Length: 54
Image 1 (cartoon, rainbow, N blue to C red):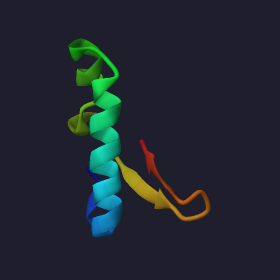
Image 2: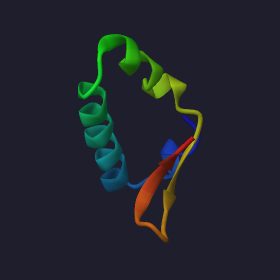
Image 3: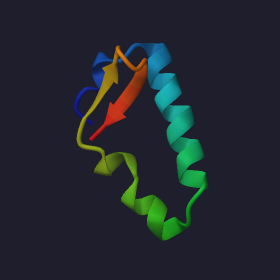
């Protein structure tokens, strides 16, 4: 996904852990809609100190 390579290792780790937890909260069909392949772009939001996904 666009922007992932710009994240630090720590930010990538946060994304991986959060994304896995998020997928576990939904069924198989719904989790397919939120797969990494469906994320078009991501960036680190410095003001909010979090990742933004598009």
